Amino acid sequence: MGTALVYHEDMTATRLLWDDPECEIECPERLTAALDGLRQRGLQQRCLCLTACEASEEELGMVHSPEYVALVRRTQTLDKEELQALSKQFDAVYFHPNTFHCARLAVGAALQLVDAVLTGAVHNGLALVRPPGHHSQKEAANGFCVFNNVAIAAKHAKQKYGLQRILIVDWDIHHGQGIQYIFDDDPSVLYFSWHRYEHGRFWPFLQESDAHAVGQGQGQGFTVNLPWNQVGMGNADYLAAFLHVLLPLAFEFDPELVLVSAGFDSAIGDPEGRMRATPECFAHLTQLLQVLAGGRICAVLEGGYHLESLAQSVCKMVQTLLGDPTPPLLGLMVPCQSALESIQSVQTAQAPHWTSLQQNVAPILGPSTHFPEGRSLPLLAESPTYEAAEAALSPLQGELCLRPTPPICTAVALAVPGAALALPPGVLLQEESALREETEAWARLHKSLFQDESLVTLGKILCLLGGILDGQVRNGIAVTAALATAATVEVIIQRCLSHGAQRLLCVALGQLDRPLDLADDGRVLWLNIRGKEAAVESMFHISTPLPQESILQLARTLAQVLLGEAPPSLGPFLMASPEEIRALRLLKTQLEPRWKLLQVAAPRPGPCSPIA
Ligand code: Q9C
Ligand code: ZN
Image: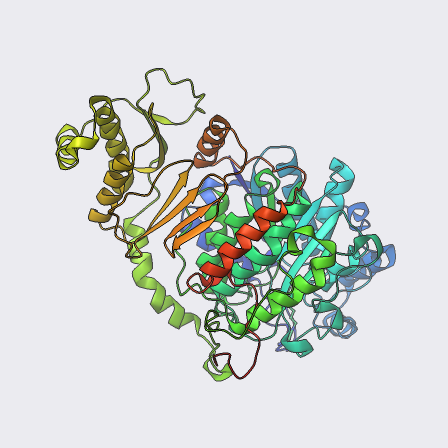
């Protein structure tokens, strides 16, 4: 069992007892919708289902004061009028006679999940909880949150397991100011939050939600705030934030555990967030986090108020936690102007604290035609509807239904008898080439290029490729004696294209030339990692330097990752050499006009810059 799902149905037992439009969206159906979604898609059945137990008062005490815990305990015996009066003492909070029980279950669920992951019972998991936690503070309930589930989970991981570096990723659309306050001066917890901010005009209207708040004392640089100053942020904006802010810092930090404050009010259709990221985006965000901390991810539900959007996003996340392939992302991958400005403001604020960001500050940006504008946002009036997105998604989902997860994960074609490569268990060995006719046809086409033994190799590779194109095999490795010749690679590419593939990425490691007569028509992106030089031959033909690494070690790691294991930690952070940085920056500058996700800075506003 790889993925835990922690839940208790009692957490549906708290609800709003009076009229309050602000609080009514935090309803019990949120949990049942998410759970029904998981059940209907057969995902719950694939998880290790754990029943939550209440956290002890000692555990609550890791974050909250005894007086505050006592105050929440007393709500069990209050009547409706008293509950309403007490609720008014806090911002956007309601109490119910079951609140104390539910809130202790929510904390308990988060702690059980951390235990399951850190004892190795599972690789990762999700706690489906109510009430949420990230706004809650030492002595205050806030924003539907009573106890700070994720903050207590982080303290627990530090105290019980001696962890020294924990990353909290808060992708809820509200700022988890509660978590920020609790770890403000603590360098062992890196807290990342993006949130709807609108220059301070969105709830909870705090100065300290802005990018300049980086933490206090020893904790400086360990609070990372990315304020979104417009609504309508989408898949490209979220990905850009991960690629250019969160991941560089996370690699440099090298966490031992990743906690996710998994709020889905950042998804399309949500009335609170008014953003546009589709449910598939959460599969990608999850996958990007899986390279950290040996894949130890504990996600805990926070917000998410559009029931259907919430359920779909939760399902996409759980599917990725389970190791299923990520679905394609909809939309042009072009971050918007406002998102680029926000990203740049975090980079500027954090650069003094993080080596990996120091190369990005003050980019050399002229108002040149080389920097086309970012995507412009639609007017506020045309806020996206979930239904519109769903309509756009349905053809794609139809296609996905026709392409279920292949039954075989990794296949290996061994062209070397008794190859010494220690292959991990779980791979399917392909013994026989069943494609004699096709192989020979290809060989006739390239007659001078294939010798006898390379023909056998080609046959085995084509057989493997056939399995992938038919949807029987998810990925594969071919181990060949000779270096793959350009001719073999060309045959592979041609076969994929003739099978109807629209876009192929070829990563060539080492001295392997791109086939000469390959059309540079945008269908094949050729990335050669070799030698020392970086070069842009075209927007689809790129060379980068090769890091020092044994090829055998690379092959073994590659096989493990293809099989779904988490990649090994990269260890202590080492900055690239000045020459490497210069080469990569030049590369980036050349590629940015075509590949918009490389852009990290908004073009300077000015008379020459194009208007979005
Ligand atoms: N329209 C969570 O998502 N109301 N809490 C804001 C702005 C409070 C959200 C009003 C929202 C609290 C966990
Ligand atoms: Zn929220």
